[in-house]
View 1: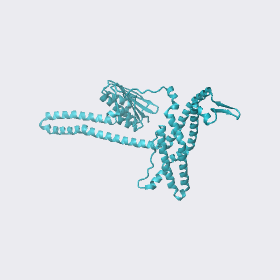
View 2: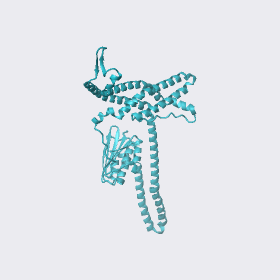
View 3: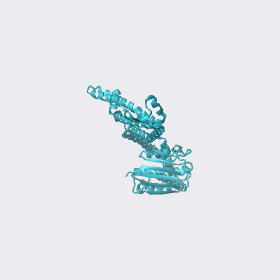
View 4: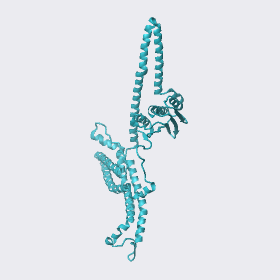
Amino acid sequence: MALAYGPRTDGPPRTRAPRPLARLGVPLAGRTWRAFGHLVVGLPLSVCYFSLSVTALALGAGLVVTFVGVPVLALGLAMCRGFGAVERARARALLGVRVAAPEPARATPGTGSTGAMWALLKSGASWRHLLYAVLHLPWAVVAFSLAVTAWSVSWALLTYPLWQWALPLHAGVDGIQLYGDGTRGYVLDSAGELAVTSLVGLALVYPAAWLVRGLAAVDGLMVRGLLGPSPLATRVVELESDRGVVVDTAAADLRRIERDLHDGAQARLVALAMDLGLAKEKATEDPEAAARMVEEAHGEVKLALRELRDLARGIHPAILTDRGLDAALSSLASRCAVPVAVSVDLPARPAAAIEGIAYFTVSELLQNVSKHARATRATVDVWRTGDRLLLQVTDNGHGGAHPARGTGLAGLAERLDAVDGVLVVDSPDGGPTTITAELPWRR
């Protein structure tokens, strides 16, 4: 659901460490060490992935002429999907990168194992997993080499005064030897040299930490790009969901129109027909009573016409079609229970469908203002930014608007989401409330 919220108001404000102080702790941060562990573990796993996947690919391609290669290829792709599941779990645990599983390889019902095999072979996600298993090995070698070298050297230099004492015992030297030709050598063993070495390590440990994080970020991008759902499949799922919302919304609107007609104008017209029938019978016997009944029926006709006009306006107001959003929203504001100031700044009219959704969005929000906000004034602003149409309704009520509280915002957000729109709610307790709707601009 395309729904967002404004500032957090349900507790004390969250404090964040100043940026310079936060950066000082980067080498010691758990995120950095998890990224380093991810890169270290990645190399042996990549060797395993590469070996098994390339073996399965070569064996399947070589045996394809005997028809044994097809099942081998399918099994290899299934195995690569298993590798992908491991990598997604590893990225989620160590890098905090959450990647959804790709679309499953669905076989045609009733085709059995043969259908499942062909579904694997036709699945683009399966081949992307194979591509990841092949391409990740050279990258893992580079990332492992750079990360381990930079991380170990920088920390070794930084902590040199802590372990330098062990070198004469186990290495036969008094410290790190910078130069030696068999007769002379230069060894870092004095107190000043130990301090300078540690400072050099301190200067290197920060770029090493950012290097580790950068390498891990590239690894995360590979997981996202090759092991997650394809953008096309994601878009198809979104469109299917939006289609369901549109169908449900249309059915709900039809039920509402049917209910309004049955309980309103239809019931009134039935009563009117009965009254006119009685008046016809009394026309000769009691003309005065018949005249009174006809007069009452005339009033009922006016009420029925008013209800039908309101119902037609609720379906699609004629003023919106004829004169556009500015006039339609001004007419809508004039019927609101609180004073509403309307400002519409549009260079042209959007598509009729977008215009209708914008109108009914403002209508729903103004109804919420009238029924729930206890406001004394409200404003409606409409403008265009780039290829987006923005609507903003603000009131000075008591606030606290939330989709879970039955104000219709959840259903409104679903309707906007069906056309790639977004609803942003900023309604702290005590007010004011500002609700912004964003729609695509279509001509």
